[in-house]
Length: 262
Image 1 (cartoon, helix red, strand yellow):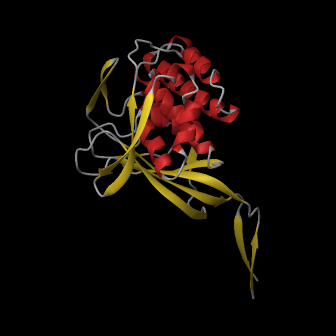
Image 2 (cartoon, rainbow, N blue to C red; image 1 turned 90 degrees about the vertical axis):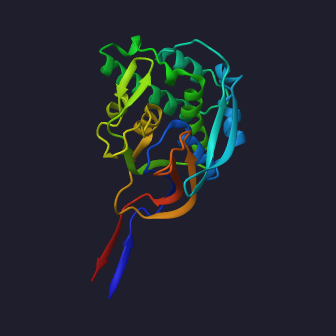
Image 3 (tube, rainbow, N blue to C red; image 1 turned 90 degrees about the horizontal axis):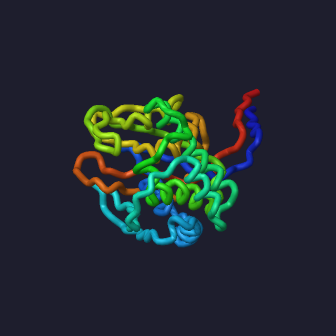
């Protein structure tokens, strides 16, 4: 006869990212909203950060290739601020509507980004000044992702694919840089990645910081009860592989599962 034993059969809510065509911070948040995270409550919590009070966030449904997906449209006030890590920590801590867990995860993501930038540019974490990723939209993407992830009770973050672009050039505050942007491979050190033949940036530094701070690979033998699936759209729509990231919510067995045959 055969018997089956289950050890640690408790299920926990997980979020799985499938970045088959790359990811950016706004795409991750858009996909999470598309999968059912309550956008109004998430927006309310994130906009409790005083520096984001004048930011307007709209959610649109767009088509990218074969996929209907959610895209965030961010309207920003004009500003010249170049924030450092200490500035971002102060901003995040000032939000009364964010839980301590969301604040901790968001601050960790920016701390990792500061360490990556410091290593690339040969400076200290304290001297790093964020340019694009210190802007209100990037702050909204990082904090909003963890705030919206908390609402459906996500306990674990995993990914199946991380695909980076190879070759090509991007233009940033430091001038021309190769693809991927130097901070991205630093952030994803130790994570399994694949490289596409597309000579364009696929995984943006903000997305890499989010992934590095909370995500681990989904085990090959993981057993997940499939939940809702969402797609987040990027701004670019140039044909070829659709510029979307896919996420799904599910229930993951928290312990090991063994089969014993007698």
